[in-house]
Image (cartoon, rainbow, N blue to C red; front, side, top):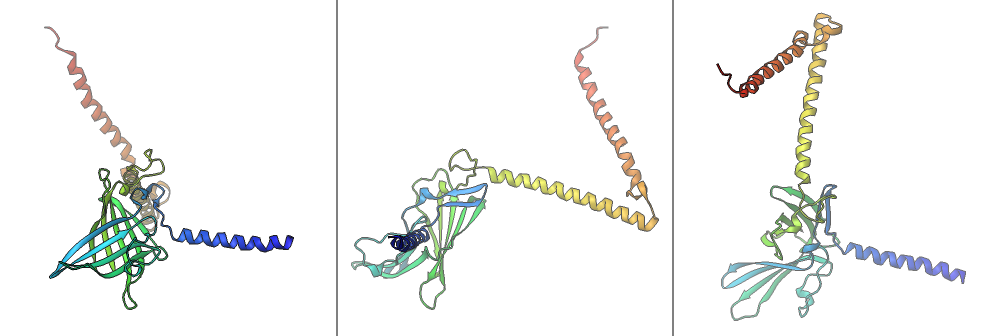
Length: 281
C-alpha cells in the first residue's frame, strides 16, 4: 500500500504540472504592465474579431481577411475544411480569398501570423497620441520565407465602443493593424477608476524634467566652484577663502539681494498709500 502511494503521487503531480503548463502557454496575458504606473487592460477587446481589406485584380478581387484574438487562441470555424484554416494554437490568422463574379470563392492562402507558442509579445506605451504598441511573432509561412510578425497600434479613444481594428498593411511578412478603443487608455495602481485613463505618466514626466534641471544646475555649480578653486590654487597658490572663484562677487551677492528686496518694497508702498483718499485743504 505504501509503495503504491509513492508510485502514483509523482505521476499524478507530473500529469497536472504538464497540463497546467500547456494551458498557460496557450493563453496570452491581456493585463499588460509597461511600468508600475502605466498599465493596460485588454480584456474588453478580447475574443474573436475580424477585419478585412479588398484589392482589385481584374477580373477577380482579392480579399485579405484577418481573424484575431488578443487574449487567447482562435477556435476552429464550423463548416470549414481543416486545411482551409490556420492550425491550432493560432491567435492571428490571415486568409487570402479570391473572388470572381458568378463563381465560388477560392481560398488562395492561409497564413498563421501569430501562434501562442512563438508570440513573444512586446509592449510599448505611446504618448502622442496616447495608446499602446503591441508586437507579436509567428513562424515562417513557407520553408524559404521570413518569420511572420504582427504589429498593432492600440489608440486611446474613450468614446469608441464595439469597434473592430483597421487593416493598415501586409507586406508578406508583417501585418499591421490599428485599433481605437478605451482599452488603449492606460491606468495606474491608484487610478481610482478601475481601468480608466490616468494623467499619471504626464505628471511623472513633468516632475522628472524639473528634477533633471536642478540636478544639472547643481552639477554645474559644483564644477564651477571645484575648477575655480583648483585654478586659484595652482595659479596663485591661494588657500582658505581665497580659493573661492570670483570671491568678491559672491561676497556682494547678499547686499545685492537686499537692495533688490528694498526696491521692491518701496515700489509697493506708494500704491497702498495712494488708496487712502484726498486730504481736504
